[in-house]
Image 1 (tube, one colour):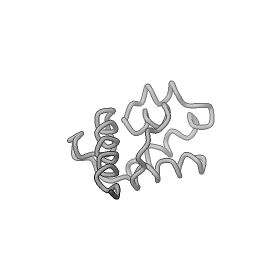
Image 2 (cartoon, one colour):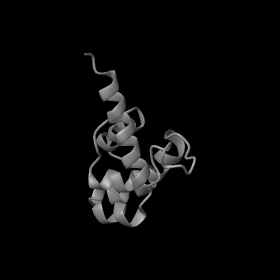
Image 3 (cartoon, helix red, strand yellow):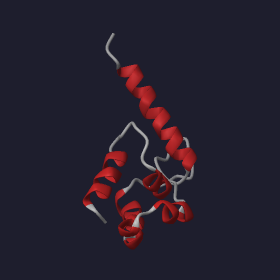
Image 4 (cartoon, helix red, strand yellow):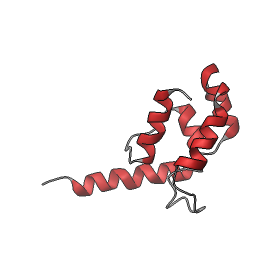
Length: 93
């Protein structure tokens, strides 16, 4: 896996507050067909590495998209909403 892809996944895991691109969005949503459709040649060749990163380096999934940070498009959307709401609440007056 390219370093920029690994770093993007780490940023997402660690609290990134902006959306990912189409490819990483599909990877994080656990959308195999979408990930292959959006992948460039290099990322397509390293798809196993992405799966292993999700399995080994991301928090476990509960199956609840209101809590999980990956595993479905709904989980990604909810994660962004939670993180952006937290930023708004933490803004100094």
